[in-house]
Amino acid sequence: MVPLFDPHPQHARVRTEVVQAVNEVLDSGQFIMGPNVQNFEDEAAVYHGVKHAIGVASGTDALLLALLAAGVGEGDEVITSPFTFIATLEAIYQCGATAVFADIDPATMNLDPDATASVVTERTRAVLPVHLFGQAADMKPFLELGQKHNLRVIGDCAQAFGARYHGTSVGALGDAGCFSFFPTKNLGGYGDGGLITTDSDELADAVRVLRNHGSRTRYYHDVVGYNSRLDEVQAAALRIKLRHLEEFNESRRAVAAIYDQELSKLGIRTPKILDGCHHVYGQYTILLSERDRLRDALQQRDIGSAIYYPVPLHRQSVCRDTFQELSFPVCEQVAEECLSLPMFPGMTEAQAREVVAAVAEVL
Ligand SMILES: *Cc1c(COP(=O)(O)O)cnc(C)c1O
View 1 (cartoon, rainbow, N blue to C red):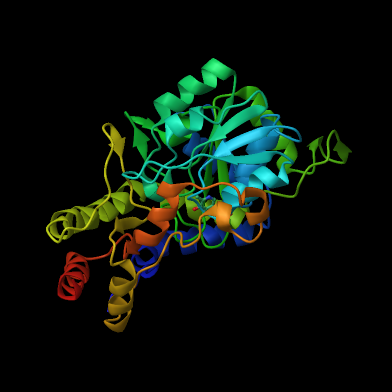
View 2 (cartoon, helix red, strand yellow):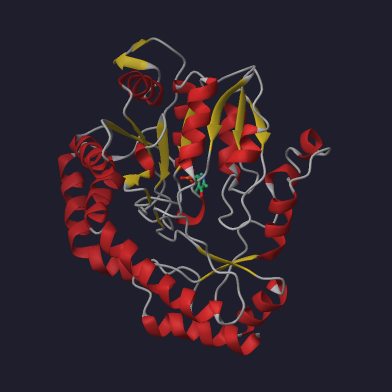
């Protein structure tokens, strides 16, 4: 038996420190916007090599507030990938903009820069590449496209805390990076949380106002804002987990190395790493035509797996009327062939080999 995700090994690693830090928060009596949020933001900014890191209530809110702070709204088009979690699309809708999809690269499953360039219009205001499964999207062409057409480039980094692109954190690329602390992510909290990273003083200030009821000074409100703050308890725990993040990501990468080596022998398409990309395996996702058969057989053997994502966004019932004329063939094919295998910090070599043996037996 190997679960798709097991939170216990990483928790065991930090438990003593986290319990103490949470106790200190409880004793302090300050639960919103206290020293842990401030310190975590400072430490996260250093980690990503950016001027500002701003805690918010979730990764979804990070995307929404970053778009709003960048001035994206009604009448604007935002180009993104149809092969991502629904939150990427929700944020575009919620800020009032129109979502425009471009197809993905079949090897990396990330937004294709050429396809993106081909759908830029006069109304395009932003590009929102997703660093899917823990690998940076190929950002250089997106940044060039942004310069050429005066577009904002905002990264959905929810699955990629620790991922680097030619040595730079994904959080330091473009106008802003948006992270999630959902418990299964690379940096997982004990509940919901999110973060926006940016070098722009203006964007950072706008996010800080938006997350706190549109207010700079308490009870004085400049704009209609949100209640979207990171809690002190989460921030206290995240400060500790951030110190262990490299170790957690290395643990994921060690499992990926075993999968890479053994699964490629079976004719499976393993994750393709782009030149200069440091992949942190938020998910380890393979591609194979016999996906459904493998998934069923793994289930029978008590090996966890998941399909991220079974339905491309342009085919979701929430918006399929809008996109019914459109087809993104690469994305549609990948959605039928993708399977994510067990991956979590502290997963043992024996567990990785058990997964590999089960896959080999089935195929
Ligand atoms: C998890 C995730 C989000 C949303 O994060 P939450 O913290 O759950 O709101 C956004 N985009 C992608 C690609 C994600 O995987």
